[in-house]
Length: 111
Picture 1: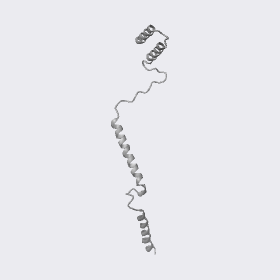
Picture 2: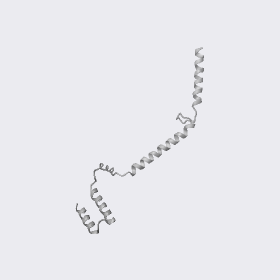
Picture 3: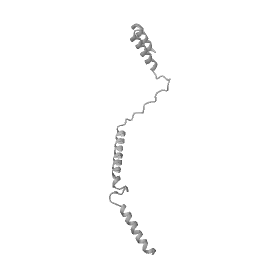
Picture 4: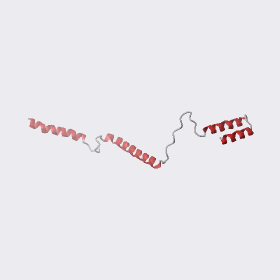
């Protein structure tokens, strides 16, 4: 009896496998219901590749900007420009006259 049952069982197992092996899965194993997901993922992948290609082709070979100086460390010329700004503000407010403004600006330019 064991010989007769084995071929029948194989046939039933084969029928079950045939039921799941439809033509809609396109070899992806997901069935037709999930096909739209693959299309979306492929389109996103193509979009990312195009984006990266454009970014790489338009990038400049300039070096990245230098890091800002540490806090409390003045940049070169910062003292002069801030002194000039203060001097111009005082002149605009009328605290100093034109002669004093010009004299101090000459001193700043020589410094």
